[in-house]
Length: 229
Image (cartoon, rainbow, N blue to C red; front, side, top):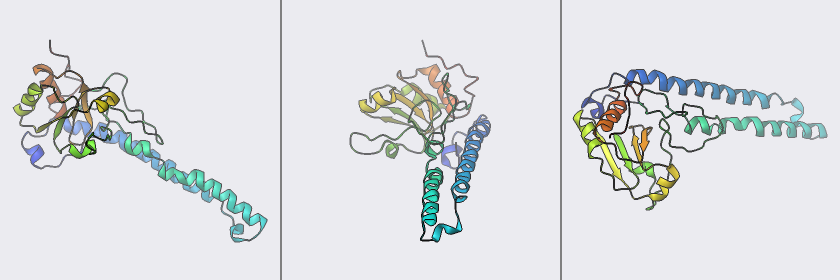
């Protein structure tokens, strides 16, 4: 998570788990980016090796060189435009600031992106009924997204308020998005990565746990995130 020392963090302070999360989250992404960049760079060398001086000749041999290089360029030069999985599909699952679900550790493709809502990923783009993009209505603080628009989230609001952490609650009546996303409630970080998802509004103890994890006050591995009785 990128955090600037501005008013969003001064009020409640940086949690002890925040620095630990940098190492886990950004190292995985950095290594993936490095490998993908190397793959793309190798593609440039792959098609350029088919260049021959005869490429300019108006001969059958020149035509063959141009055709061969063109096919190679189409296949290998395209690598630099094909890294959508690296650009959009990265996940912070496994971070101490994410309520990682069993079996959802990062495993993303370089060239394909499948939108999903497992904790750790950035919440996917969706169009709202009024034509706005979902991301356009989300602020720069922690956000609880309620896609049913009817949940009582007062316990979670109280938990964040207890440490002066900014939480915006966004109530929407968007059943089509809930159907696609598979859940009705999403707790988002300021960078729009998903901390937690569920269908039942968290009660007091679960709210305190979610707040501690999201703000870096406690590790997701140390806090037992169990539903309230």
